Length: 196
Picture 1 (cartoon, rainbow, N blue to C red):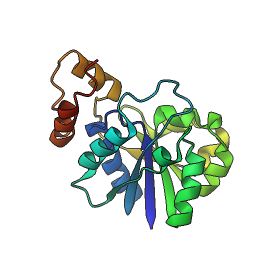
Picture 2 (spheres, helix red, strand yellow):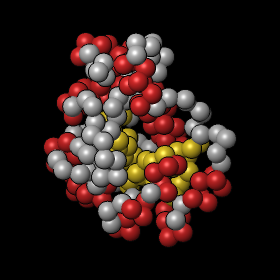
Picture 3 (cartoon, rainbow, N blue to C red):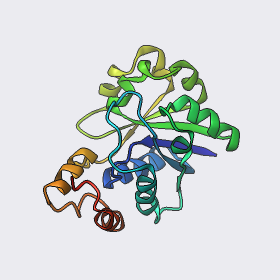
Picture 4 (cartoon, rainbow, N blue to C red):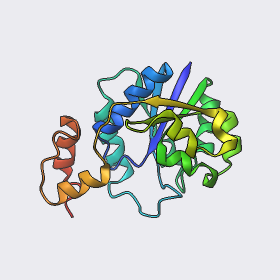
């Protein structure tokens, strides 16, 4: 079984996350992608604005229509900082398979700062998803030398959307209906998330 692991704050999850996951399924021929909202990103000091429970509910709605997408609350349940190496260790015990950890181009540059990155690289491959005009060569230029052989580059169509911009747009009352699926937006509105 070929499994993608897609971690992040997902605060909120949006169409860009869906596009990335769908590109990875095709580009890496994955059987499943597990979305895992983090409890706390050790490299980003700011805490999530929505609770873990709210982010789980939004993700549930985001992935509801795709049988290849699954959801896990393991990092929220574990608490503390969320480390990929701990998550992969747990996943491999309960669901053996071939794993790809999905990343954007910014995250792969930070890999040496992660907890036990060398151990992680022996547990999974890194699926780096890039949007034009960035090319495979551009990505590999920024991958630390010792990790290059563990990287697979996946191309995706550009989707101009970021969680931080969505939060700002919601706060100032701008329409974000083209950036998040209807069901996710409905939940955000019901819960009055990101209003202040």
